[in-house]
Length: 153
Image 1 (spheres, rainbow, N blue to C red):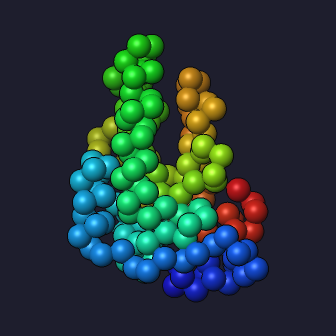
Image 2 (image 1 turned 120 degrees about the vertical axis):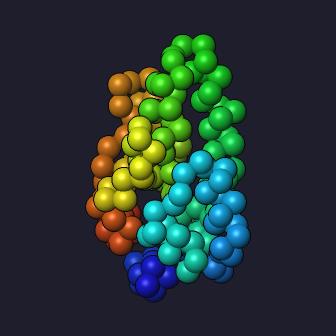
């Protein structure tokens, strides 16, 4: 489903390279590193295609991004912000796509640990010091993919 949608929407974009499916064991490992279970739509996407080398991250890139965020953002927050602010602005997200400019698309994990599967957000790194660095861009994976590849977000 997602593979066909992206293939159709990215026709003519030589940079999009749909990757082979991700093994379930790699998804489980990525969930462990992220610290939250992935929403069903993200698992379905990864089982169908493990990223597209353009916007959608592979399971390995999701893991690398978590580690990079801890190396980059955690030291800043340890100096200037509380642990709760770090959790709220960086660690309560499941980043699964990027715009290539430092911003990410993600699911938000609520303070109670429940993943909000009804909304996909853009996480804007330039706004990290503000009260809120994320905003809603889609109500699900299909809408996100469609809007992204049509240049709407």
